[in-house]
Length: 211
Length: 370
Image (tube, chains in turn red, cyan):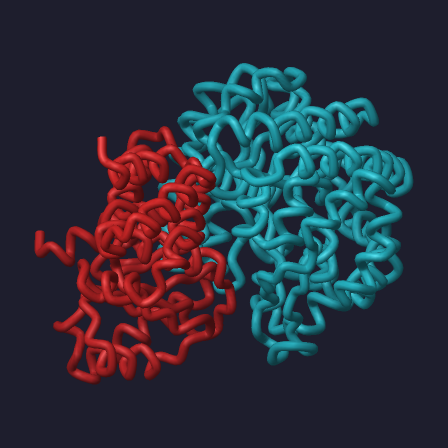
């Protein structure tokens, strides 16, 4: 088994010390950083599969994404380049009038570590800011997070703003958060409702792969 | 003609029968709504959430217009309580937000990993005394302790004066919720992996404070029930190994104390707890209520715990906001028929959302009447 496939498995097993040591070893051996990033993303695939099998839960997704982030730190620019060259881009934000960020941040971490570039607009994001970010970053996906039923209208208005700007057909809109369910997705005009962070990853990958 | 006192007693008996897993004359309905009541009555959220003299009369005015309910879960509301449960800053309407915006918890790392050591060494109470000024939570704790808690007896009395008993007017919770709020969710989860023994030592050192506070509050206020709240400690957020170590034992310990004090613990559980429902078979039979918020499978809860613990819930926030009275009534009737007549209390999931339609809430309350 190569060093890097061992690396993927170490991340899949959430062995933080082993991941750190293997990445340091690979860099010392002048291994291509892009290969290392790929192995780490393979490790996140293992994590995702274990989540789907109810072997892992949100706690493991958070820890895996953290190990991924720490492991990538010494790779620097190579990571940025690698991420740009992978699956695609999502513009992500907590909608206007809602300042909760932990759900959004966790989804952002998990998407990033699965090879999707995340443009994080933060919390309490104005509708127009989503439109501006779509024009600037040309994402395939837009993600709205919310924890309050009182911002369902804001999500609906944000979708309407994206439509009015003529860019709705360029993106798939995914939504998630505590009070969100399929009826909310239907109400606001989103393309998908994501029950949790891993569903967000799978939904994003499905759209980005065009199936 | 039935007097208000007789009506109050009938309702208390109905709820008590449901908790004891006996057959009540019908399924009781015991809702809860805070900012919803303020919106319905046209009261500024900023006044409602900071002024006890505004909060409970507003809730009583709203709910007495919504039909024949059997009880209310909380007697009053105060935004300061959130900071005391989650050791977090909360943006208040009127202080940090416009008057009619909803309060919102800020996800900040107010606690450090060193705090675990101090708590383990000195105990939670002494540590908290230093933490409150450091985290700039003085206003919150002062309002809670001096401004709000002392008003609860009057609030409970005011509800009973209109014939409505208060099921669970106070909230207790486990160290997990305090620390997860104080550290922020991501940082705390990482602590559970990177320094589990340190976190556990701090949790164990926190329990004496929580248990003693619970005993004092129960005896001082004369309540008959309480929430044992669970939000971020939900099964869906944690692996079984972590949940069994950092969550379950603490609910067991806390529930034992409140049951020993002679009151009913209502497990107010947000998010999805379906995976771990069977663990609640270890809690005393016919003494507890498990209240789920529509994320937990309430049918599974009834299947697993039905002969052991009263189940309460779970009309979803989105249905109360976006649904129609017909849909709400249909769903509520289904719950009453499928999960009643014994060991079931109809309620919303979590709390009636601020922008719920009053007609939807009315439909939920009507559903127990046929």
